[in-house]
Amino acid sequence: MTARQRILSLFLITTAALPAFAEDSDDSTLIVNWDGRYRYESQQGDTAGGTPIIMIHLLTVAKGETPCRLEINGFQTAENLICATEKSGARIDINFVSHAGGSTKNSYGIEVYKPGETLFSLERSAQDGDLITHWGALTPDGVKSQSGAYFVKEASNESLSSPQQKRLDLSSPDKQKNESSE
Image (cartoon, rainbow, N blue to C red):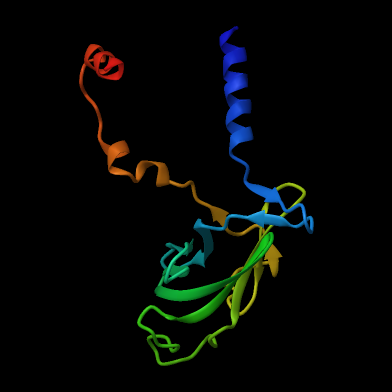
């Protein structure tokens, strides 16, 4: 087997073992694992001095007591929102619960979002797997369309999170060979 054939077979095995989503045989809807971190970055013009105005939205979806957190950081902005999720097949709604401090009012005392209000939704396209954002109560400045490819899922580093995988074995190859044969 040539090196090219080995690489191709490794690629095929790897991609077959890691599906992004699966189809539910009962109702033919996509079942998506939404756990992870999503990012949307936008440039919203320049300051008077010519510095770019950049906004970063980081969405973290996880199982547990706080299933969803949205951080919005950038030019004169630092928001940390607690959210709830409603999952339905290939779609997840991100609903406002409160600001990180527990209040429904922002740092200026204004209630911008109502509890339970859908900030936005993410949907995984069945045709090509693209991630589509549908803006709701939260629509950032500069967004040209209410729906489109805005958020992207960040690569997961979970495989590096266990202590065993973080340790580097700097011993000699001979020692590793001896340990593996014991």
